[in-house]
Length: 448
Image 1: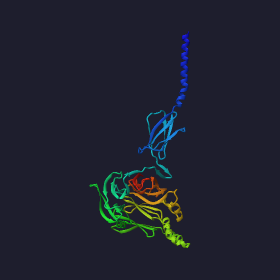
Image 2: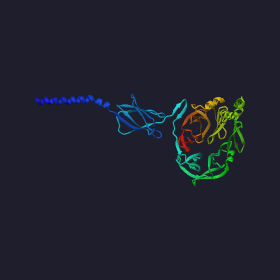
Image 3: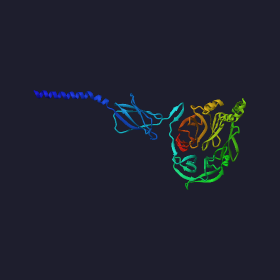
Image 4: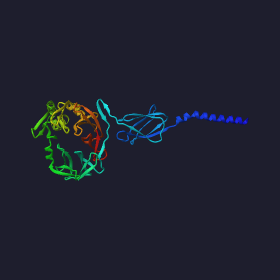
């Protein structure tokens, strides 16, 4: 009898313990936390992405990736849906049904945003030539390679490098004349080295010998005067652009052996010229005796903020096509090398900069709006033409569609205060120096 009672008591204790275990098990599981670790990568380049937001849906819990693209996320219960998002990348959702002990890898794909028909892309600048002991003074494209003028600490320790577009050094040469000034590429695609002594040397890369040679020597004035109005050569024609002395008219044409000098278009800013001289007389007319002494300063200020920088531009689009931008009537004409008109359109990307002297002065000192910089860049390999805008030291390149004259895409350079932009084979090359590096300029490129 006693044995039977003890047996029943033992069974009751076991049942009670099992009941308690099952009762408190959900509370234990609910109170358990997991830590999900991993990194987020760019699906196109494989680079880590920083500032990626990871958030658990219907929960305040979340985190963001660090500079190496890594993250740690606390998950309180399963299953859970993790929402991953980052500016410039497509957002994704991940269903988490069980925890993993090893770090996970999340891939985000870059996106292209379309705002009112304008494509804006997020790009990354890549150093082409970067040496702690050298600074880039100037560069020019020579064929498919890059001529790079660099110096170490001072200009007297300068040299000329021939690089591939990927930064590999093909040749290195001492300079024939020191100190250096710049490199200059003439309309015939020859690159010249200019020294401070007034001498110009044509640079030639001897590929079999892997040497940079200086084959001709001229004065800088001779080179600049020879090519002063020339723009480029196409087939047997040499195209030119002539500016009127007062700056309000331009003439575009070409030279060839058959017809000599021939004009294609004339851009005449006659109305602006009349308004300019009328306003100039009022602006400079002395109202008080002391105003006479300020006339010269007033003239310089009026020239800076009022007069157009050019009336027309001609650019070589491809080996057999060129485009003429006429800023006096906002017309864009594209021709073949045999002078056949391919397309004719209107453009207005520069109109926001037009206006009287007062509005021009106002926009010149306003830091919020993008300001047109009067530049045109031609990629002769792809046939694309770009212009640029500036805002608070940052530049954006805008592709111009020849058929419509409209802006197709905008590419904001990821660094500030860049110098000397050249576009070739879909890449924008430019010089940039980081803050705190003194005069240590570097050569970078960015895919457009």
